[in-house]
Image 1 (cartoon, rainbow, N blue to C red):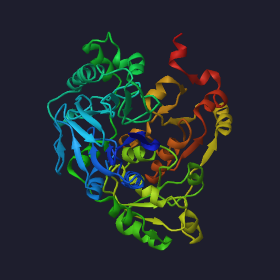
Image 2: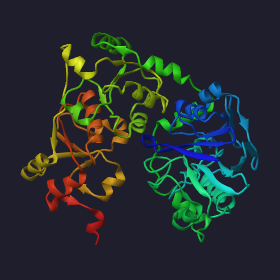
Image 3: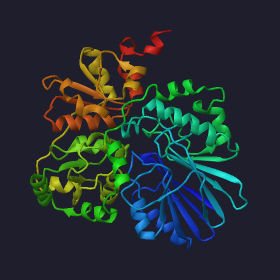
Image 4: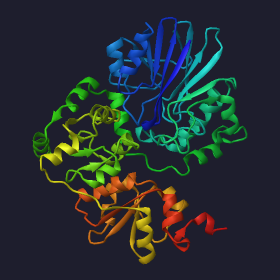
Amino acid sequence: MKVEQIYTGCLAQGAYYIESNGEAAIIDPLRETGPYIERAKDNSVKIKYIFETHFHADFVSGHLDLAKKTGAQIVYGPNAQTAYEKYLAKDGEVFKIGKVTITVLHTPGHTPESTTYLLKDEQGKPYAIFSGDTLFIGDVGRPDLAQKSGDVTKEDLAGWLYDSLRNKIMTLPDEVIVYPAHGAGSACGKNMSSETWDTLGNQKKTNYALRADMSKAEFIKEVTDGLTPPPAYFSLNAQLNKKGYGSIDAVMKKGTKALSPRAFEAAANETEALILDVRSKQEFVKGFIPNSIFIGLDGSFAPWVGALIADMNQPILIVAPKRKNKETVKRLARVGYDNSIGYLKGGFEAWKQAGKEIDTIETIDVDSFEKIYKQRPNISVLDVRKPSEWEAAQVENAQNFPLDFINKHMDEVDKTTTYYMHCRSGYRSTVAASILKARGFENMINVQGKFDDIVTSSVPTTAFVCPTTLAK
């Protein structure tokens, strides 16, 4: 028996490859099929099943393309209704892969169809569970993503989740390995661990949601408290996973079309495409195509695309570093943005060499911000971090302007005011500055550097507000 976790850091997502005696199963595959097909080919095995733990909201699954290319059967647990052919498994049903078995454990709560798959080894001993978004390491799945599907509330779902955990998962042996669908950084939970697997026994000791003395009422309150609104693209991705989508091969072919600066400019004008610049933040601020938006590949690229580009059918033109064009199209497709129409051949340097117009964003480092703040402590500061980060600590008089919801709060910014923008590292502030610049806001000064450095080096002690500290 072979079990491999295929973890994709930028999405904090875990897919799984299970192999035994010439047969294989894939659990929660990403959109691109290559990694799974290549593993099976290298090991001379046939992919027999594709198991889906639930309708994923944060990425488009690769189950449809993978099934077409391999002949594998798509399997969902109870209550999963789709527009395409699949096998709807019953609670407790057993599937054989070579000499091992997978047992279906219907574990509703995160969503009504959420299912955990229990892997038993060649001797029939419970070995691991693939828990999807039911159980994470250090957390459980949020119960509010599927509440719009009917009359069910997040409290109802949280109650179901409590029962699923106690009756289906916590009864398993402590040595069983927990393989979740996500880790730290995913918006599918509140406070996931950076670890990507653990034993069930250790989770019973350390995961707040698995406390032995926890009542259902306490559980419901704890898992529903502090939930932030889910990213707008979540519901759209879930619908794609239910209804189907186009071939990844067609998406890649269209999106990786090389365009000269002249053709790129013409395409932008003719299609009203969004120009997406995925270079580093340092490169972008020094020069970019006017009205382009920065979302760098070196950050949480796909989630930020999903949160900030409202229309998934929006035509997109790509400005990428050398040899990163194909990767950009693939990572866009992972979250359902299938309408990439080409990339700038030769990158931004080719645009400059062609004598085309460029724009810049004034950017300063932490030391420069320190000097300015000390001289003029009443300057306008925009903090684009999350509200939770803001509440923990902030620069005095700064305005919280979370990047996640920038499109809904644009009217809170005055075009005549000069703003100094910061986040935790400079990535989010550069994204925000690019969006504001494209909307006609010219008076933006971007601060690149660590928030800890802003606190310890750039801001006088009296100007740093930390509610927890002040309360002591």
